[in-house]
Amino acid sequence: MKHFSSLLAVTCILGSAFSAAPAQADTDLPGDFSANVALTTDYVFRGISQSNEEPTVQGGIDWSHPETGLYLGVWGSGVDFTDATTEMDAYGGISGSIDQFSWDLGAIYYYYPGADDSLNYDFWELAAAAGYDFGILQASLSLNYSPDYFGSSGDSYYLGAYTTVPLPYDLTLNGHVAHQWISDNASFGTKDYTDWSLGLGYTVEGFDLGLTYTDTDLSEPQDCADGCGARVVFSISKSF
Image (cartoon, rainbow, N blue to C red; front, side):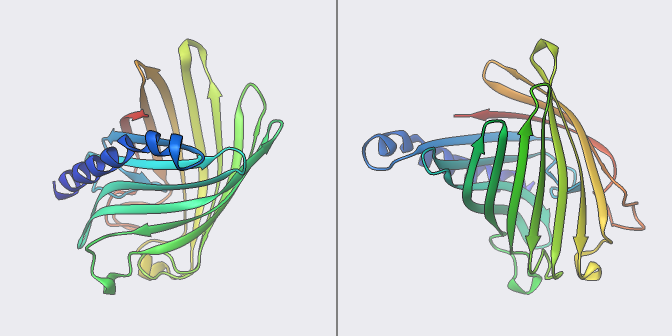
């Protein structure tokens, strides 16, 4: 799998860069650095498989400044598109909290190195989110907007509601439901659609395990060629 091997290389580069970050943070740069790496049985983005329903490797590096709330990061994953085997995202923004209320404003750039420019894969999004910790659960709403979405499909809005519920035995229940609006459905390849997921998380020996059921209201092959149906995804990740 090309996308699997390419992301192994990306992850190694990210890991090498991060290994020097703590020393830099102590002497030169303010703020905190962190990194993450994951193996997942499928890369599902907004309910649709990006890796042709195959396993892939993912990883990223983040910097944050607690005093100001500013943050920056890069993240990569294997994909399986025409003329693209890797996705690289760069993002930044500002976040904060007041008591149990939290908020986040940012921007994301999705980049597919090596893809032909005529495919118009690369795109920007602006993102806003707000959440509240009720104690027994955490809930949030988010809205992402792109002026020219993937495949040059025009204006795009993605509105989602998310919840996290602590369970006994150190388990965590995660769920979301969201809707994707796209101006040029023909260019994107699907109609506007709703996606949802429900998953369990567990941490053991510093590794985060996730088992997630995800689905959309799209039908195969009427509404999409493949990758938009129901599936269960397993992931294992590690943060540093």
